[in-house]
Length: 368
Ligand SMILES: *[C@@H]1O[C@H](CO)[C@@H](O)[C@H](O)[C@H]1NC(C)=O
Ligand SMILES: *[C@@H]1O[C@H](CO)[C@@H](O)[C@H](O)[C@H]1NC(C)=O
Ligand SMILES: *[C@@H]1O[C@H](CO)[C@@H](O)[C@H](O)[C@H]1NC(C)=O
Image (cartoon, rainbow, N blue to C red; front, side):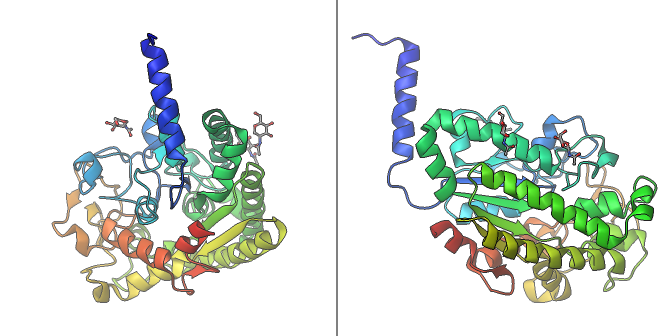
């Protein structure tokens, strides 16, 4: 019997799909939601002022031979490293990339977007970005593609049992919304920090509940890091090495307390769901405070950037000054940790110390 080329491709595709789901251990898919801390290239496809597909970003990213990919760091993001440690053979593909089709999505999809936040208005200064509402809308599209690829019943099992949903969002709601002069002054006059944080938590609750309705069950919720200690904040506020700006850290801590309560609440209220809380704030603060202990030379100066005493004003690009010892800097650029810092953060979250990851480790979450 002669097969047409198309039938043959289809048959091969079906064979490879059926071997895909067969008795494999480990994680099926990793779905990554969030902001520039975990964006793996979505903003490359948006008309936006927040871009990282310019050199020297990605200089240490092996899979691209050191070329920029849209990741806002010199190497892998926390999301990439956690995926690797959980046994993922491929990085989750950016939703907006032309590669996010067919079988490639079975390893996961990345919806994260530089400048994105929980609120739609967050990151408006960048003109364009995917906020969390839209990221969930996009997962709804992916969800239908899974039904088409695996069949409804198998897709449901795969999403519920073998997939992890990580959400790393919230920093921009403070840095590029509430704390931003001019654009957000209205919001800050009309809303107290308490009311703004209430709003954030209410929106996030409904976004997470929508993911649950689409069969997400295993969640990792990252809290907001010490955003008052990033080189950008330290530079514009003209602080010294060991100081951090108080208000951003105070807001982050206040939000983080509420986020932890939200995780507890959803663990009780959404049957069959597990929300793991990742305490990124304390973990990054530990790295910043005791940087020398972890082999870093500085936790205040950006490796790639320009302006002020910590190279913290102009984002990383071809004309930035670039340090020669990238793995000795906690911060890659004015906003984002280096790969060296991301490796330490990801390892701690994976292996687990109840101070940083609770009520279970990410590996335990995978194996549930
Ligand atoms: C898409 O896939 C091709 C082939 O695997 C690869 O060379 C390319 O880098 C990918 N592009 C993106 C944006 O991931
Ligand atoms: C945010 O934007 C999305 C997409 O445009 C929309 O569906 C959603 O209703 C908006 N949310 C709010 C709270 O305005
Ligand atoms: C997913 O999309 C469908 C329309 O295709 C819509 O009816 C449904 O409400 C959406 N689900 C969520 C959770 O957004």
